[in-house]
Image 1 (cartoon, rainbow, N blue to C red):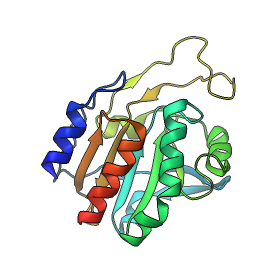
Image 2: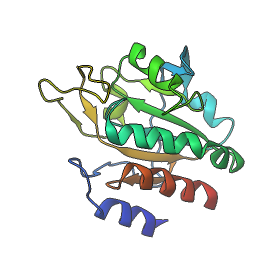
Image 3: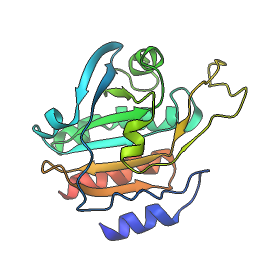
Image 4: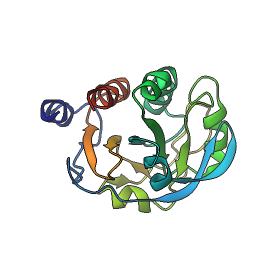
Amino acid sequence: MKKILATALVTGLFAFSAQAALDSGVAAPDFSAQASLAGTEFTYSLKDNLAKGPVVVYFYPSAYTQGCNVQAHTFAINMEKFKTAGATVVGVSLDSIDRLNKFSADPDYCAGKLPVVSDADGSIAESYDLQIRDVREGALDTRGESINHGFAERTTFVVGTDGKVIGTVGGVSPEENVMKSLEIIQKI
């Protein structure tokens, strides 16, 4: 597991380098927040989901951006593998809930297979010691719509049923992020 983490942290393919302070064995901050699954809003609770099994909590910069589209789609097409391993997956970004309602239902991305949480003020990302950067002025998503929120660094935490971090993945491509997270889950 340490080899996976070291590889993930050394490979720097994006503007953020993974500097998450939450290493294996550290308690993952609990959170409850507004979320969307298949376009339907609900309140997501990490604690409630940990009662069912390990949870993959993945932070991503913004819905409808190139890397995030790839990552959401890769999670969606691999969701059965995560379920077979007894895990659930939740995405977290600084997107508004309205934006996430569309993204969560979009058949090309989340495809109604995984919930996404709105961390509009960045407090959840900050509690996981993730960097947040401001969006550049005039930034547009892949649909040509304005992006008006900050970006959390792309980092994934695999959280065990005891609420502690089992593994952290960051600094790799969006697709590798998903596959390394799955690898950790399958080793539990």
